[in-house]
Amino acid sequence: MTDYKSFKLPGNARLRIRSEKIVATLSSDGGNKVDIFCEGVAVPFHVEATKRTPKEMIDYIWNIPDFESEEDM
Image (tube, rainbow, N blue to C red):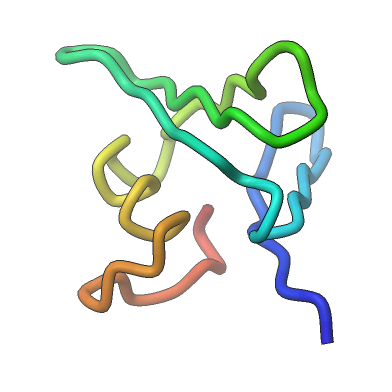
């Protein structure tokens, strides 16, 4: 079974990324966006943290155990 990370986007859209394709994440202090860099994609995906903090989103992406649920992503 393929493992995906899923994120809500504006306009009821959803971004799903295969977990094994994610190579790096980046967020800046004080910002509410996370950049997700993926293998084979020249530019990162920009995902806005609305219900979670950028740190919680990065923990979710990298499977840090304290993360509760992907439902609010």
